[in-house]
Length: 264
Image (cartoon, rainbow, N blue to C red):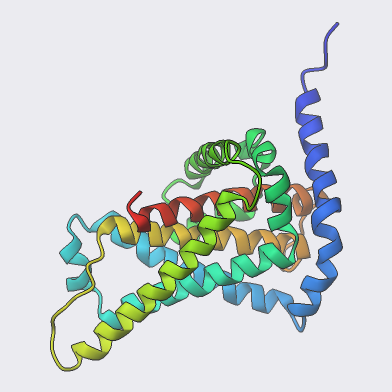
């Protein structure tokens, strides 16, 4: 007679629930300890910072056709602040992934999770994040994020064992962002005396920076779901399945953003 048509979907959801119990739930007490004293307020602050930076950088990608327009429109201080916000948000996302068990889970099962991912698996908070960033159609963009995650982790599955390449890419991004902050700081200090030596950052570079900010926002939001840190009610399934699927898209977005910073 064959399998019921929903068997693969049921098995996928069971896999995510198993992985949540295996990797994430045991780490939640530690996360609550580190993020205690009103976790909603702290998560809201970190999420708002990532969204603010990603929104500005989406404006750059959408409205400017030439690299020079970026520097004619924004001051060195505002650009430096955007880079700092993205760097700090990525650091928060990395810390949450490591301490929350997501990093170990992705190293062991990232490609399998991404292979079964569908837009309907993503939590509604992801649509809200994309809308805040400036997406004209969050539903369409979520479908594109799912495709991106599948492609990213399909490439990862071809690598040999060891540190997951996606995580290595995220750590590489941290170093790139640190250097960029220093570069913009030097330019800001020098611009008080003279206007020259503008950092040579292309629109593609700023696009990559925005992708990292967006990926960090999605990752921070997923950790908030897992902890139940937001003020709105969520179902147990959203807390488990939604947290895992959201981090998959967040990591893929950051990884591809780092690729743009590198010009890959």
